[in-house]
Figure 1 (cartoon, rainbow, N blue to C red):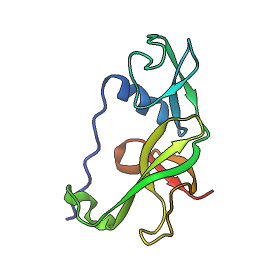
Figure 2: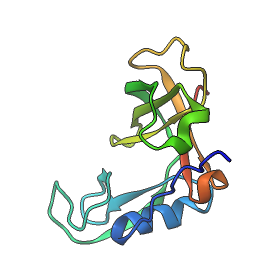
Figure 3: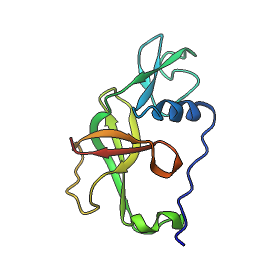
Figure 4: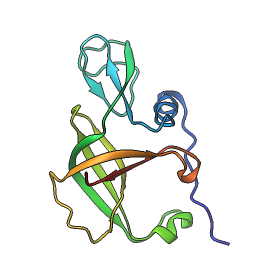
Length: 134
């Protein structure tokens, strides 16, 4: 029997992030004072220090900032997915998020490549963020 990947158990602000993602759409924390977006979620705005925020839906459009290709799993539950690509995407809102690349590990990836997020709510028992070419 193949081990299943272990899903994280979010708590605090990360739990709020995943609860919103469970709707099937990426949401970002946005300061209600200065309007700037932030990720990962924080209790205080790093720009104006306000504790006030809301969760705002995001189209998930952005550009590839960085990536890594994993050839050896740290959790054997991911072994069947090898090799897989993890990407850092700078969203149009100005914040960066991390997710899986929906494509071949041999894909022609380059900094600045346009990508769009989807939320896979069936994957591994929690909302899994994926990025693909538009």
